[in-house]
Image (cartoon, rainbow, N blue to C red; front, side, top):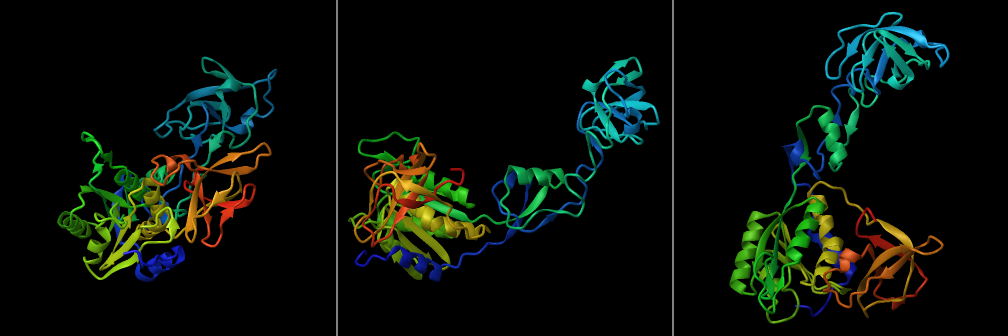
Length: 413
């Protein structure tokens, strides 16, 4: 199956040629279900926020002019005429020479145009002494200061996180239109793989990839469905893949894509429907056995069994497809400039991706240190790495101290 490997660029071109991913449609969902979903349309406010003038401190609502000239040795004296509570409209109005006790968030009563902080006052019965002059609108958040009625507060295409959902809640919205999240079937293959939670027999390992890949799918905007571990058996694997294609918008497998006698995935996937295999091995390290097929309109990404290889290939090739299916825009990888902390070698004739960890040297310059793992199957490689360095096929190495571009694996790095 791997007589002629595609270059990395050829593989990406094949994906672009055969896959034309676009958003799957829209649906209205509740705010509590909307985290990490993509907004389908602009949202304009139907009210002012705040909807009334409100106090930003605990103190007394006053007419600012009644406090002019007030100071420590010559306080302004006002008469307390009542209390304004939070969560209810004021039952009083302020006339000249009057003040009303008020708490943070409470509406400003008619007649008042400022709030003096309680720390700047002294009260005895209904007499209030104000020791610091207030200016008009001091300690007052005016109606519509935060959001004005009719203002577009969120744009179509925005990913809804906690702040965005908070904005929608502030507008009284209970449902929001979002793009449908693609359903992504995830399954693992291999006689050596056991599902977590079961007893680990000798010679077996727990299924790492299904959990890391399912999480990566969710981070990319998809809805992962874990279909478990499938043995290296033609009948069982075909049945599992047919079920996955029926129940999901795309499929991700891991393992069973190399050249061993039990590596059955490429042949079976190719037989499930046209056009079949579009990529069957890529001249990269890690990730060489990566296989990609299209069954009807549904893509199948068969990734290597090694955890680092699988996640890296997901990051490079699968994530962009899920993003487009979920309504997210195409996005270039975030890169930073750094200095190579050591010599990094490429694999002859293959695009090589070296995992690196970033640190600062004494001159505060970013330094990229290769993550020492020894093998692409090391479980913790991507957990340790902040990003990766790409070495072209025709370049033998990157020298220590050379300026390089590091593609970040996490936006928070």
